[in-house]
Length: 109
Image 1: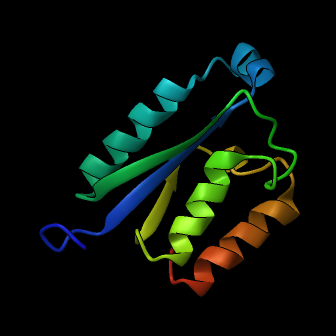
Image 2: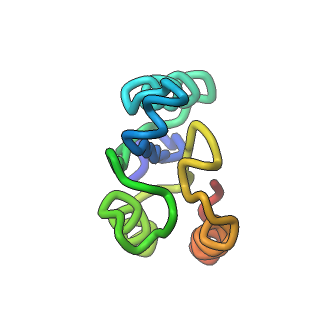
């Protein structure tokens, strides 16, 4: 149910241990950026899905992204916010597959 007719947003964050060491962008920093974005655009942030210390090489082995997909099918949110496209996947095909899946539910990324 939408609160105050605001668009319901969810965030997705991911970092592998190696990426965090190299890029220095933690899950908490990604979450903070997502929260700021939602505040700036008056979105109702209802959840942030997370996969910590997990490679972005595929979608299947990540609980957070699977929960996001299930909740998208259930219509629990209206848009997905990410810090960087590579947080979804390191494989372009997986990223495009998820975008297409979200689009079938009329959910923009």
